[in-house]
Image 1 (tube, rainbow over the protein chains, first blue to last red):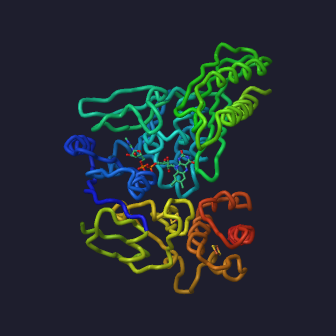
Image 2: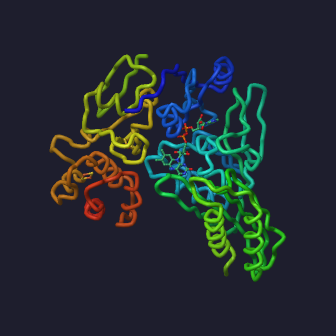
Image 3: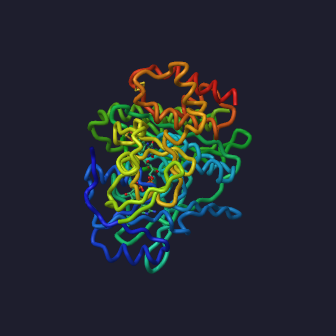
Length: 282
Length: 152
Ligand SMILES: Cc1cc2nc3c(=O)[nH]c(=O)nc-3n(C[C@H](O)[C@H](O)[C@H](O)COP(=O)(O)OP(=O)(O)OC[C@H]3O[C@@H](n4cnc5c(N)ncnc54)[C@H](O)[C@@H]3O)c2cc1C
Ligand code: FES
Ligand code: FES
């Protein structure tokens, strides 16, 4: 039986209380849903002095739908997204991505903040959020900062968050009249995703008005954003695919336990090709 | 630390270490052994319980996280009249073999019955994806839950 190491457990009810405790403790570990935090503790991958439970902080449990943008509080459970987000295209892409996370029991425990902050290349939401140019809303003792999600990750399992900081939530602009596609490829025996692709495009009378894509997964380590707005003709699908494949070819992709570099590139080509067909084909 | 958990309508109060997992509280403090421990990694669903009506994997949760919530285990699904509809159907149709996974499928099946609309084979297949059965081929389990849900 796997038992976590000993730690102090601190439940915080306000952000101020969180900042105070997190700054006092030498090695704190935030816990929201716990699906990954508890697993890390059980496997003794981390031995925190204290586990700080943030699930009762009201600011992290809200979803704000404004006129043009949406704020999703970090503690929002993944399974709730499909019922609470508006029906614009950016939200649709987020819902598509969130609904592929684990199974319903994982989605009912797992939070948006936990999915974004772990920095595991297999996490779903970071790729969808990168595609729609979402921002991380970061809280610290002396204020709030906004950072594009694509700049939130340093390397696998390392984000820009420092001790005492916290992800308050994510913020994104609503997009209307877009087509969306979300694809991923799983390595069953390793429980990880080799490649993830999120795409969103607006087409009006055969003209591409806007086209964004992000790729992620173990192949690339952290989400990578592509701005494809230079393409305006849907007949250019072949050229767009070639451009993307060229780009993937130039990326530094390693041979490791998730597969050879060649295999991972092929997975990415396939996912990219399918996503492009889904959002651009008339 | 002292915690009080509400399981199947009964309050269980105990002095536990913060590192105690919910599944261990359920089995060892409350003495409810129907909730099993399998993979311990959140993959097999043998430890599944309902937490405020939603299915969760109790091996991935600290007991202290469940304070103030209503927990239902497989024992809590059956009422005065015995097993609930899902449990009865799984048993009558011999959908299971050794039964190690029974708690997981009873919990998720009951959640499907209470929450999902327009239930069909495909939907049940997706919903039960977090529960593993090493004996059966799933088909009979999916058919059973689908049929019970359709007859609701
Ligand atoms: C069986 C299984 C299957 C899974 N399948 C998938 C999958 O398909 N796709 C996927 O993306 N994920 C998957 N996961 C991973 C995980 O369940 C999700 O990423 C989930 O969203 C994590 O949320 P949580 O609230 O449980 O995070 P927690 O476990 O509470 O936290 C995760 C990490 O984030 C940190 N953290 C949490 N909230 C904040 C915050 N507000 N600010 C700063 N740091 C924070 C914690 O300190 C911890 O390091 C799976 C997990 C399991 C066990
Ligand atoms: S023991 Fe909890 S999911 Fe397997
Ligand atoms: S009946 Fe044996 S594990 Fe399911």
